Image 1 (cartoon, rainbow, N blue to C red):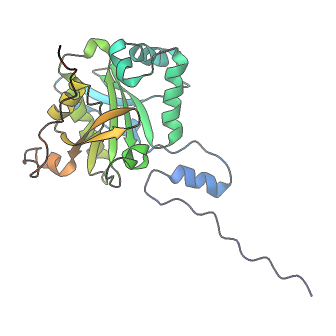
Image 2 (image 1 turned 90 degrees about the vertical axis):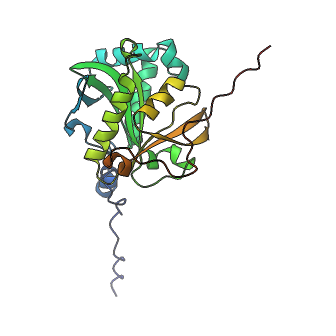
Image 3 (image 1 turned 120 degrees about the horizontal axis):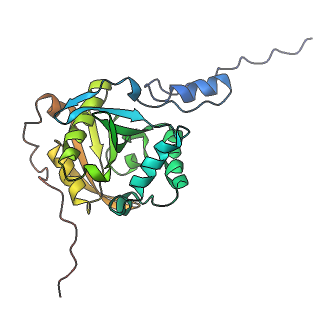
Length: 248
């Protein structure tokens, strides 16, 4: 008798179809490797109009022109930036960090371009797919942002303006996203203040592996109603003050 035919094989199973993991699932289906799919097609987003001029996010390719990494490298070695980003060092440290963002598959590193000039660095990422999700009550499509402003653009009130613009861009281009959030170091008082002034609310303090963070959240529902309604009872109005050394 001829041998029994082999049992039918099931095709490789794709990851859930939620717009972010399609590239990885397709790579498995084809039995090969592919660059991880980015979670947002930021290059297609329409620039935001702000009172300081048009603002857009420009995704960074670490294999692109050296001047791109040179600019970001200079910012990362600014002492006021290095104190919180902890990426001071040779340009390869900067390039390695950007590559890691891309390889993770859920983060898009970008230059912020205001009125035609690169003046800030941003990371827009799926917070519910990030290790951060293990430290707070994450919801599907939560979107996080990290940012830094180039030295010449600090102290001009641009931080809050651009944070609000970027969170609006996320809401306008990612319909399932209901919250944009950030987790600045509680000791980074200017950053926390910028998020508060951009319509974010302090939710809780997080004990992350590398810092004590203030979880700041902007809700789509509040944005769509003008960020006007008062927060629910019991919501802190501002993050706790960082500990102060005892005075002599």
